[in-house]
Amino acid sequence: MSDLWSVDDHLADILRAIRPLDPIALPLLEADGCVLTEDVTVPTALPPFDNSSMDGYAVRCADVAAATTERPVALTVTGDIAAGSGEPPTLRPGQALRIMTGAPLPPGAEAVVPVEWTDGGLGGGPVRAMPAGQVRGGERVRVHRPAERGAHIRERGSDAAAGALALPAGTVLGPPQLGLLAAVGRASVEVRPRPRVVVLSTGSELVPPGTALRPGQIHDSNSFTLTAAARAAGAAAYRAATVADDPERLRAALEDQLSRADLVITSGGVSVGAYDVVKEALRGSVEFRRLAMQPGKPQGFGLVGKQRIPLLALPGNPVSSYVSFELFVRPALRALAGHPQVERARVRARLECDEPLVSPAGRRQYLRGSYTPPAPGERLGTVRPVGGASSHLLAALARADALIEIPEAATGAASGAELTVVPLGGGAQEYGSSS
Image (tube, rainbow, N blue to C red; front, side, top):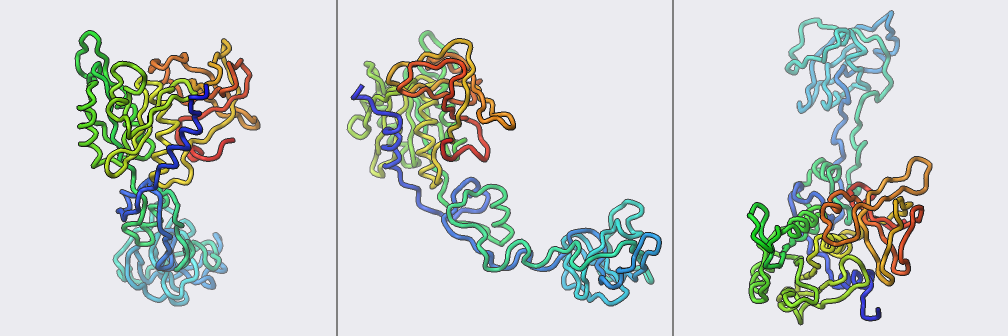
């Protein structure tokens, strides 16, 4: 077994060769999912002015201090303040200004009483906005609850003070972060872009879905699986046309695609068969290896073209190629994008199975499984195998949401065994340290 690479050594070799992509400035929505490469500070206070958090009336606290349901306080309404209006009028003693959510607090006001605390809210309807200053003569509002200073007011700078750090470099940008960037006035930011990935399937037996099969042909599924997996990993992935078992045609196809690629994935043609076109076409620039794993023993990795683009050559069996993607390609893509955590988080789980699992000695086996997280108060979740170990069982893979890892030193596992599991779903805990 000394000629076999370990899974860990193969991944480490790939990651040593990967350099994060250079930062570029992107508009906010194009930066979604990218890693920030600059510290972003708050240029002006957020919010930039005191404003109302409710529809209601701006008041002075002393004017409503004695208000009760039995003895409401009557105030003269001297105007309306809508969100987006300019400088509001000054509030005088004994007055109230009708104010809308988000509108600036007028000078002299100390609190906002919600419309529900007034006779304006007895009908259950919203405050009806009027043009500023257009108030019916002598209009009054009765307030039946007192208000403390600052009630229902969003103070200037209460979210973020001017000069404060909004987001540090290294932040992964999602919807809340993009919203904050927009709120502080940034239209674009410096990020590491999404890696551009080209996916090439090889094999003269492959035809596109939707094409009638002739004898000996199968539909190409790998390129669709791998392109979708790369997109799910955050890449801008492109599926290139399937290449027949012809080294010259593969070399030409690669030459055409390298100009738009930060990483290339091929599937098929990496074993020891007579028509292993990827090995023949790329020998010298890609190192082909045998790994101590199942499925996915044959693998290739190298830097190709003048720009030395990383190329990962995966096996052609559907399950082998997908497992290889999860173990090697996904971490490479995240390293290119500058993510600090590149591997999916591992968890420990208790195996549930009807028959003991068998694993080849000296190989790290990855079986498809269905994972159930631990119940409240439990330390371990459970995992159940889905389908068999064969690397062509695509239907079983489609029902799985986890990979079950059986280590090299083990030759099997019985029900109740505690094993390492790689959940394949998303969520906040998708990446992180092994548990």
